[in-house]
Image (cartoon, rainbow, N blue to C red):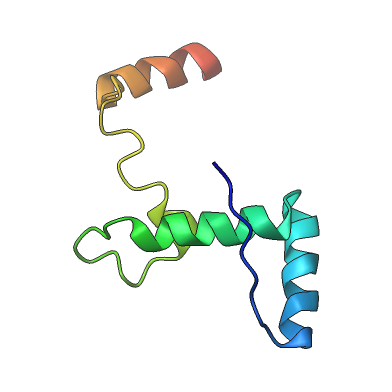
Length: 80
């Protein structure tokens, strides 16, 4: 269920938020919602200095089946 939220923000910041949302192909509401989701996610040890985009990739391949030999075979097949 979605609920309306009213925020009071400096006009310059609103312009920046709208421009960012437009470049991202999202609404300002979606951008703010994404931010709140990121704020609620636990941060891995040592990841504090990483950008939110890089932090979002942490663990993305944790359950993947790719290993060094598989990658080597892939490269050999591609460039063989």
